[in-house]
Length: 257
Length: 275
Image 1 (cartoon, one colour):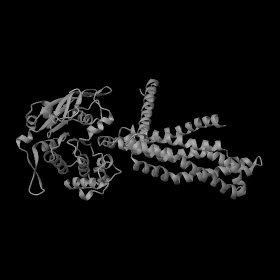
Image 2 (cartoon, one colour):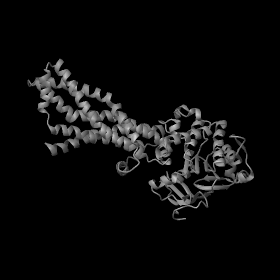
Image 3 (cartoon, chains in turn cyan, red):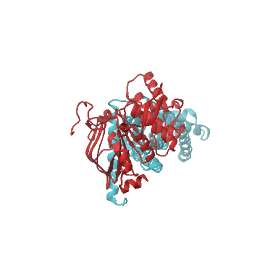
Image 4 (cartoon, chains in turn brown, yellow):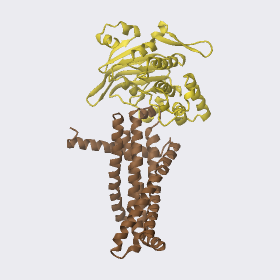
């Protein structure tokens, strides 16, 4: 019965409505008391500092692999010296934001969905409400703020580490001079690229956290429901990241290029 | 009774249900439920699993909304209030959830003082003192810095009671507070319920399907012994009459009366339930 198109559409419309309601409620919570400051700081630490290692490793190996692959292709055109330009453009505009967001989906999205889902099925969310606390202000808003603020910071770090990883390969494997590598980066980098690379993580960070909070708070059916919510948070979050990346890219190209 | 009075003078029931109905899609949970809870009294709600017992408590606290009928708490209707308006009503309601629903990531101290730490402007020292006092009265002082996962089942329920009463609500709602506990541990939880009712003057609604605990709470009373000692003794007939039983069946109140009336009933369903 759940496979009927009308039921699927109804369900999709309902989920969208609930998602929008959650986002609107969180937005309202931003402009009126109470604001749970220590929860915001805690989440900044958890999402930012806690994700640093995984983001650094991802950025490093991606940049290194990119330099290695690009070197092979560029050799066909005798253009090996511009490898830095290719690595930096790819990292800053595309791979840095998307891969950081995908890593955050795996680490933060799953964690948020599992934590909030567990709190729902063990009545802790109801206990919060019964004790006079709005769960959206206490749990959702700090996570959204931390996600939106930390995703760009982590992306910038991933970009730098990726370009550094590219340099290691360029210098020691491709035998490209250090000065040449870095100058090719600075010469070829435009402000539009930087804007694009900075706007994306704000949008992606927001999507990862809001989707995870939404599915976590709607978990039902005990531990199985928590597992399902976690899976949905990662799958829907990852697809949303890639889709949003495409649309933001289109918008930025339309606006700046 | 249609509108909430600006100030309640304290007369009349502290909680009242008037023809309350609730259904989830096609499943009717409460058909037509009406009852009242007088100040300082105990209402014990019995019924099989899925009969709507816990739903009643969630409707009182506004965690669920009834489809029709009136729900009155402290003289004011709460069934049509917004979530932010309900926060004020909840200031006088303490709820003990099934399994305790303690916050996993907080210590016992932080759990018990949660509302005072997070939702009031009371000085930290004052809140600390209150938390220590409440845990001390329940013989839980040694566990104050433990995490909930380090506690036994009975300790978790008692911490949940401590959390619900730390901010001194005048109405406490117990949702299966003793389910899953062995009889001896369950008695320690029952004793706390009795002490809060008789020594602190708290009005209580106790939802359970544990008959032993239900009758224990209805037929015992707490008295202040010499010094700080509190004794649990057989209740006087006057005290017994302050506890009333409700039996829910298929979303309706199947029985309402005293412990004695319940035990003497010839109703086949009640006899089966009590056997």
